[in-house]
Length: 477
Image (cartoon, rainbow, N blue to C red; front, top):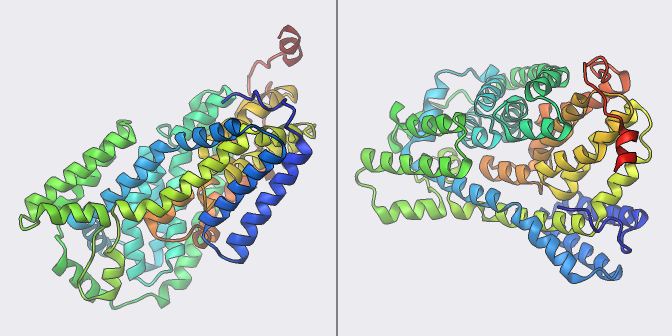
């Protein structure tokens, strides 16, 4: 998107700041104080942005364009959401998720459950480079196992999300891990190595916290879950063969097959498996499961609550929230508010600490206002690249901050693409799991601390980077 409107007569940094405050007040009051659905908060913010546009005499065609372009940028995510809903439903019907839970009980200790979930999700996430796939596969299984062990769903979701986004941040297969160094003009593997300054401390602290919390809850977890295991085995198809669909999906992810075709294949393999292992299944019955989700009728409340999920319809609340959030982000960008705020921040950046802090805050701010992970990397990356050169800092510092305050912050925002997706898949509200997503919370904090101390923040000269002559470039252009 071009910034042709940022210098137009209707843009004003002071007015943009006032609009920002109003939007944050609306969101904070409705979501945090009244605990209203975030859909309504974003809808009112969208109405407020349109009203601001009319007051500023911004043509409706400009605002309409922003809404349409904002929504169009998320159409792929919407389709992925619906396919994930279908995938979860057919995996439960095929016995994949019940089998993961039953076999998992025999391998995982309750005392180390959170640690195990965190580490395994980190390993799988790094292997395939997708937090979404990790959460929809291992994450759903861990939610089932942990709930039956008596652990708080928010704790389990925090461990799953922390591990999944460790992988999404560090994997060379991840889109964001490639996007951030691309914006900073840094080699991919130089970027990954430099991220260890913040990622390893965040991982270690998270590991200790999950171990401490898991150990303290170990004595209070359920000890009589054999009834639940027996209920799963009596009412679901339990077999190692049911691991074929997730195995196929992991292989396709590693081979970097795009998400939508990979999910198509995963669904088809699951459907074929259902008809082979459960020949009594009627086609109409299966289609209903795919549309409306799997309904468990074991008579055991814990199992029925756990397995009654999935289907396209289960993702519609998430889809509507994403459409509203993307529309709001699009109109705020098109009227120049985002650009005004970033430009205003740039004027106060004169030291290393301020630069890193401002870049991080900008990434977090874009996540909160726009709810889009990629824009939280792209916009601050474009805005602050020349500042890193002017202050003689290595550009890999910029790429690291973009990941620390962009990639891993998105799942902490209730109306963001990642936040909505994870709530829909794991069944835990974003604000409930937020305090336990330790890895995601720690990364931006650690990156700001390094910016203040200067630890792990090399200059361009020390990094062997040939600095650009910014002044010369500006004079030429």
